[in-house]
Image 1: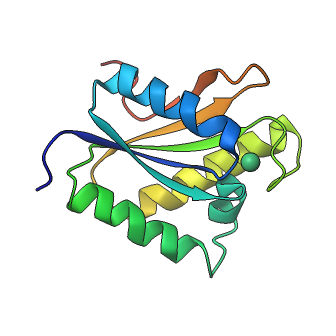
Image 2: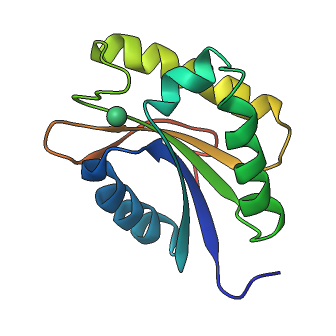
Length: 132
Ligand SMILES: [Zn+2]
């Protein structure tokens, strides 16, 4: 097992979201490192189970969970996403569907759905363990 504690994010390749998300995850979960899996609009790519991208994301989440011992996996959707240029409502639909796909992968981890708003602030949309 790797040294230090890890969390996992599946986030957009958009350079505006990675820093706020990484910082938020470190503060929220007190982890040393955030494994960052990027794609262009990952909420949609997972929701539709894109045959080229979804298995690759799954493989990378697996490394983070199994080799780094991550206990929490967050999927991110964000405002002004060029990779998935849809309304916020549609993003939140994609995010919910994406989380169902991630859950189906079967790891016993806490799952979060996060929205990064137009101020580049992180908002919790869903959390499988909200009463911690
Ligand atoms: Zn994006």
